[in-house]
Amino acid sequence: MAKILESTHELNLVREAQGGNSSAFGQLYDVYIKKIYNFIYYKTMHRDTAEDITSEVFMKAWKNISQFQGDSFPAWLYTIARHAVIDYYRRQKNLIDIDDCWDLTDDCDFIKELDDRLRLDTIREGLRSLKSREREIIILRLWLDLPFKEIALQLRQQEGAVKMAFGRALVRLKAKIPLSFLLLIWPGLLSLTVKQ
Image 1 (cartoon, rainbow, N blue to C red):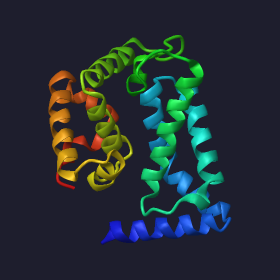
Image 2 (image 1 turned 180 degrees about the vertical axis):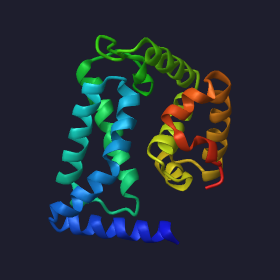
Image 3 (image 1 turned 30 degrees about the vertical axis):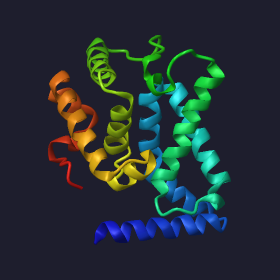
Image 4 (image 1 turned 30 degrees about the horizontal axis):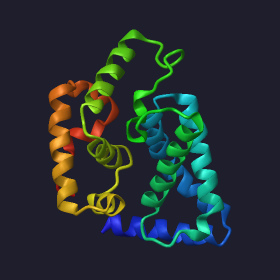
């Protein structure tokens, strides 16, 4: 029931923002800034780039809020973020698969501590071992906290197939990455169940 009320409140904020209420959009921004930043960061693996693209995503969202017609604001934001990352790599003219864009890193100021570097490299290797679609599902579920129904809509797949892919990917990640490392980025992982 609380989730329905929260969703109704969110849609009310969206409607107010569509009417030009920047304060309502600011509330939406506060809720989603960290999730969108994290999604972009793990696609680019570079803080400054992630900050710039995140800024661009929210500017585009504010500018185009009147075009939002769905019932899932986070899925709409995710779509903008995904396209912004793709556009970024197109501008960079990198000759890699866009879905594998986290393979590019700029290590000059990336991690200051050796321990952090080891953890990040381990996590990155674990994620790299997944198929592109599995990585996307993991990011949408764990970083953006989207329900499986919304992920299925975004990826144009059946909800059951998304749940199955998520479960399999999570098992493979846990086999490759120590649980303590995973809990650093996803503290709620222990209580997470596939059925949601």
